[in-house]
Length: 252
Image (tube, rainbow, N blue to C red; front, side):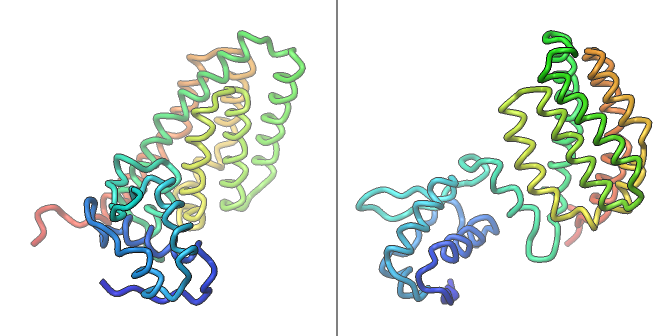
């Protein structure tokens, strides 16, 4: 395959980005091997230390396997990589990958109610008057007030993301926190494109108030149901829109 010379000869990040794009795009298939460090350095126009550092980053990301004295092997990122590759998978140049977008939306709809349920359970177990909990609930309510005061759909989406960020603080789950961070990183670049469909959700102030109230009351089941009612309409509409843009499996 043709390698593109890197302009900044000492920047290993450029090497990482180019190889990562080839792996995630399928141009470098799982099980294939990369050229040697020397060959890559010559093809990319960088130093061998820059290539070595890039390969270490690729290995840490679960995209390749680097073994001393052996060729560097491309891994199946679906089995070896983590959520940090989602933003790269979602955006292919200027286009959104429909299948990846759908999976993010499905995860959003599944995780949102569980996070809200967990937040309400934590409030119930700790008590809403406990100083830390009380402070986090106050911030949650303030984000709803900010959402109500805002009329721009794009800004509303950003405030809604902060609203969920506060719910995660109350849920106090590192696993959900890390998952949310990666899903948000993948979702944010598409905010402007999603604004027309998301406007109904982020403009539904009553639903956000109800969700905040259910969490503050320490009612897990009610919080989960309210979160699902808030998230499901836009999620369903977005998935239907994505399905309409995917190529048919029966197409030649």
